[in-house]
Image (cartoon, rainbow, N blue to C red; front, side, top):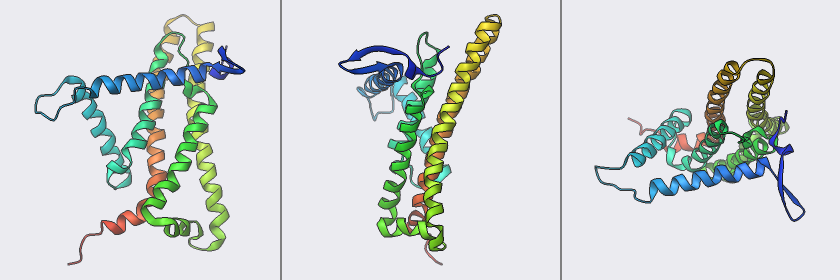
Length: 231
C-alpha cells in the first residue's frame, strides 16, 4: 500500500525523478488550463450564452459570495488567488475517482506548498491594504510583548493548513486500501465516495481559512475605507 504519491517514481528527467506528485500536479494544471480555454474562448456578454459559460459564471458568483460573506470586503481583489486555490484542490480531489490517479493533495509536499502560498499572500494583501507601517504594527498590538507570539501564530497556522489537508486526504486513501483487503467491493466503493465528498469539503475549508487569514490582515484598512458617512 502506497500512502504518499511521492513514493511512486514514473521516470527521470536527467538526474531528477518525476514522481506521481509532480506528474499529477501537472495533469491537474493541464486540465484546468484546457477547461478554462474551452469555456472562455467564445465568451459572450449577450443575453444568450452557452451552458459552459453559464456554469462558469455560477462558479465565479458562488466564490465571490463566499468571499464577501467571510471577509465583508470586495471580492474582486481576492478571487484570483482564493478561486485558484479552491479550483486546484477541488479538481485534484475529484480526479481521484479515475483509476491510477493519485491526487497530489495526498502529498505533504503539495499541501505545504499550498500553505506557503497562503503564508506569502497574507502579508502581501495586508501591506497592499494598510501599507508596511499599518500591517507591521498589528504584530505589536496591544503591546510589543506580543510580537513573538504573533509570529509563532503566523507559522503555526500555516503548518496547520498543510497538516489538515494532508491528513484528511491521506486518511481516506489508507481507509479505502484497508477495506479493499478485508471486505467485499461494496464497502470500499462507499468509502471512496465518502472520500470524494471529504476531498470537496477540504477544498472549501482550505480556501475559506485562507480567506479568513487574508481578511484578518487587511480588514482594518478596508473597514476604514468603507465606513458610512456620519449623519
